[in-house]
Amino acid sequence: MDATAITTFASRALYMAMILALPLLLICLAIGVVISIFQATTQIHEQSLSFVPKLIAVIVSLAIMGTWMVNQLESFTREAFSKIAGM
Image 1 (spheres, rainbow, N blue to C red):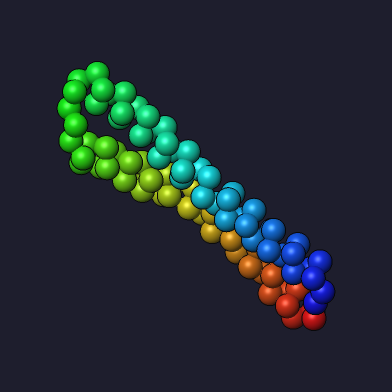
Image 2: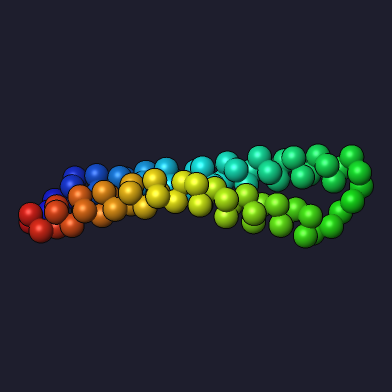
């Protein structure tokens, strides 16, 4: 395995991590902005008010997108193992 193959594999691994994490992060960001606007307008500054909706949103989005995420990770892992076995 040469340096080019290692670099390509590392960049694909980082890309896969970004693809898997991005939907959850965007959902948390959107919920956080909505909650922050709500807190600024009502002047209610409770910590659990911002944490609980984000937690619920992440759990729901994992329930909805979990199979897609697992399938993506499984295909990447199979590809990585097949390349390792081919060395």
